[in-house]
Image (cartoon, rainbow, N blue to C red):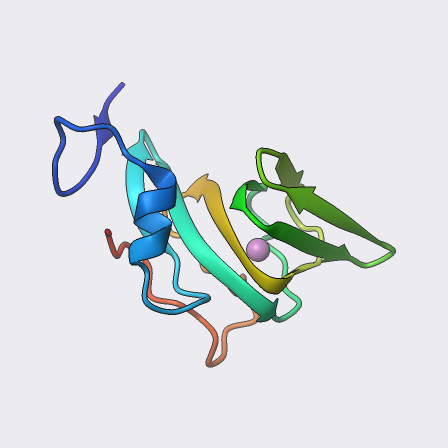
Length: 128
Ligand code: NI
């Protein structure tokens, strides 16, 4: 088992500090990897697009603010310090009034827009 992180592998990752360094919303940045999984922080503001991930669950840990996760027949409000896992294949849309800072945990290679694609697809594997 290995954990890699950048740029300083000798220091713990301060998730809020990393989130604060991101210069724009909807731009996930990696803060650590563990086996095939990636830990990404992201600033969420406004509404994303509907999508799903047919091949994987997707975990959201809220660091600050309130994350709203719209599901087809319900909606979940996830507060700072709370975790929510969207099951694989379930359509979802993330949103926040104001801003939410969030850490996501998912396997390497998962796109933020799932199979929807489009202009809101973020580049993967960018460290902060
Ligand atoms: Ni998703």
